[in-house]
Image 1: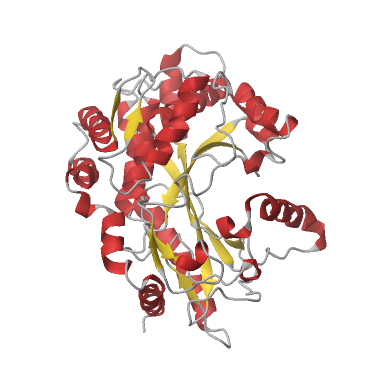
Image 2: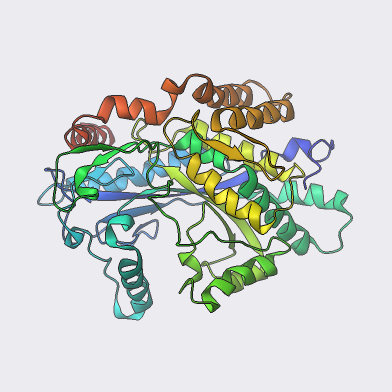
Length: 425
């Protein structure tokens, strides 16, 4: 773990790189998913995810949360300008939960040229295995890498011979600690409590549905496999091999099919081989689109994610058994609930407390860890604590209050407002 309190390391703790991947659905003016293609040109930062009408913005790596948000806003604006200029103007749906869905035909698999046929085949497989409705959830993946200045300073104290192995081991232990405590990120960024009835009853549009969840896509109804994965956090190689074992056993067809809130990534396109060659960064996959802010993610949540990752990389967490990892999956699902006083987090030592109490314990430790880091960090931690002290300050509570009746109709008003903001209208 990081030597976080050493004088040569501590000044570098919050030096790192941020990359955001934001998925959003294109819709028409009536609240239905847009059909047909939309050309965003050759900009590789704007692509499609599962479906032809699901736009994905990928920012470059940025040095601060503010820069990451600014970069995301830049590409959001480019998408909005393109949609507004179409012969039949389209909008960008600002929620993780989809609007009206008439049938799976509203979620057409993204079109790729013949030389990228593997992408089409993968999406066809996901469609058959999980259904296209589940693929219509959208969210944000937050990618974070420690700065080389931090890693080099810490490596000098680590007594290790090989820097690459040191770096990989640090990320693997961080990933294991994220399994233990990462549910708090689900809780603080949950922002999808309501959805349209057409998601659960084919073609029945216009009904407002609340299922006791703060985030449907991170709950037991969302992005999870049909089993609780147990991974090997001994090294980058064993971690990759443990994912491959599920492919070999037929539980997964592709490594990227592993739906888990935490993912380690190698240098270059995602593959287990690249991961074995070196860990580049960690990916947090539990972030909902936040319709309360224009960018889709609050800068304070980006900062909190960094603060959490640095703290977790500096803390000697428990080594997890298979039983612990199965329980951890349930902890993530419990943190997706709306009332966090009624569901519990079970830690590897067997202690069990409500999500609220467990989260405040984590924040207590983070506040102690960052006691000398100044007002911005202290304010960010206080902002997150309030979500557990005052549940009405949580995004899910605010969104249910504002959009819980007439979800799609009110969501359309917000989608139009956001587009006007980006266009300066």
